[in-house]
Image (tube, rainbow, N blue to C red; front, side):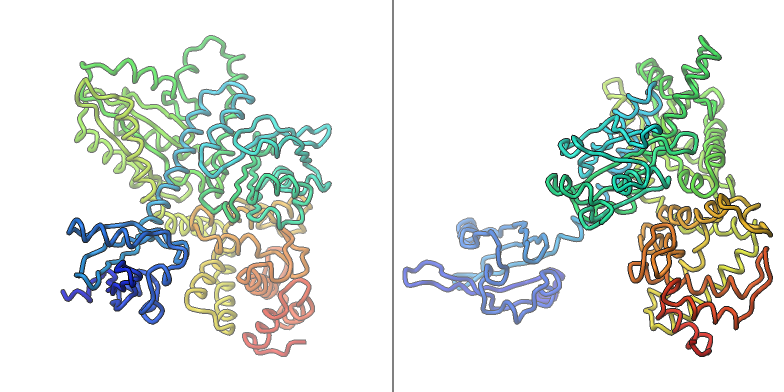
Length: 640
C-alpha cells in the first residue's frame, strides 16, 4: 500500500534552522487525504505553518520530540489532547533525515467516547444493583433513605442527593437523608408540596403530580426562582426529582443534583426512577414485614424466603455461600440472572403484572435448576443460584436450559427473558467473592448488549396489546399516522424526520395501555377524576418510549402532544414553539381524526365542522402554521 494511501493521517515537516544553528521551526510541507479526515484540518490551512500554529493552544514540545527520535534512532508515539480540535490524537514521530521528519496521525476520540459510554452505562447498572441489594436488608425507613442516598451518590456525577417526606399538616417536604457535596445548598432549603412558589420547583412538582421532573438548565427555569441564588453559589445546573410512592400514593421525593448542564439523559432518568421504585418497594416491604411479624412472630420462613416468589432471599444466599465455600463442594459455580423489561411491564400494565413476570422467572429457574437448588431473589429484579459440584460447562448448559424454558413464556403479551452470567471456583485458593463478582460483571455485560435489541419488539408488543383490547385505537393511530405523514411531506421534512414522525404518531396513545377499558370505552361524559386518569396517558407513553428508545425526541413528542399553543394544555403547560414540532403536528392530526370519526360517546362530526374548528382554534389550541398548512395543502380547503 502506498504510504499516502494509508488510513492513518501522514504529514511531512521541513526543519528550518536559525542563525545559531538550532531548529527554529518545523512547518508542514505535505499531508495526505487521511490527515484531513483524522485531524479535521484542511491541507491549505496547515501547509507552511508550524505545528503549534496549526493547532493553537497545543502544549507539546516538538523540538524535544524530534531530538529524542534523532538520538535514539527509533520513532516515538505520543497521545496528544487538543482542546482546539476537541480530539484525542495518536501521533508518531519518524526521522526523515537532517532536513525534516514525518508524523502519523490517528483520531482516538471515537474509541475513547465508546469506552466512556459503556463505562457510564455499566456505572448506572452498578449503582442500581447496590440499591436493589441494600433494599432487601433494611428494616426501617430512616436507614433505607440514608443508605439509598449514600449509594446513589456513588455515581460520579450525582453530586448531591436527598430524600424527603411530605408533612400533610404543613404541606412542607422535610429532608430526612442526604449525601454528597454542596451540603450548604440544603441548609436553608424550603420546599412545599402545594402550589406556592416554593412548591413549583422539581421536588414539589414531582411529589404533587406523581411524575419525574427534570430541569437540565436549573438557573434558566422561572419556577426554580426561589433557589437560584443558592444553586448558583453551589454551581448546580441540573436537577432531577422523582416521587417516592407508598402503595401508589406519593409519600416523598428523591432529588438529585449535578453541576453539569444538560446532564440528565434518558439512562440517568431511568436509573433514578428505578431507584425511587426500589425505595417505594422497600417502604412497602418494611410495612408488610412489620405487619407480618406481628401476625406471624417467630416463624423462620420469613427470615430466609422471598414472599413474592417463594424462593430463598439474599440473607439465605449470603449465609449459604459462606457454608458451601470449602474444597468438598468444588467445582462451585455461581449463576446470576437479571430480569429484562420489568420496568416496561410495570409502566405499561401495572405492578401486578410485574409481579407475575418475577414469578414466571422464579418458576423457570426452579424448572432448569431443580426444586432443591439454592436459588434466591437477591434484588428487585435480580436472582442468584449457588451450584456446588457444578463446573463452568455444566453451568453454561443450565443457563441455556433457563433460556429455553423462557423462550415461549409471555406476560401481558411480552416475551419473558433474563440476562445471565456465571463463573466457577475450581480450586481452593480462589476467592469465591471474586468469582461471584465475575459472574455479576458477565451478567451486566450481557444486559448492556441485549437490552437495545429487545426495545423495538417490546414496543410492538405493547402496541399490539393495546390494539387487541381496543381495535378502535388501532384504526385511530393508523389514521393519525397517515395524516402526520401528509403534513410532514407538505412541510418538506427529511426522510429521517419522516421516519421518526411516523413512529411517534403511530405510538402517540401507547400510554392508554395502562388505563381502565371502562374509561376508554365510556359512552357518557367523563367525571373529573376520569378525565385526570385519561390525561395520564401521555406521561405513561413517555415512560414506555423512554425505556424502549433512548431518543428523547421520540418520548418527549408523545409527552407533549396534548399541549396547547396558548400554554393551557397538559402535562407541562408548554406554549408556542417550546412545544416540540412533532407534538404540534400530532395535535392537529389527532384532533381532526377525533372529530371526523365515530367515538363511543358521539357520532362523527364531519369534515366541514372539523375544518371550522381547526381554523377557529389556530393560534390558541393549535400551531397556526401547521393548522393552515393542513387545511389548505392536505385537505385542499380554504383556511377561514
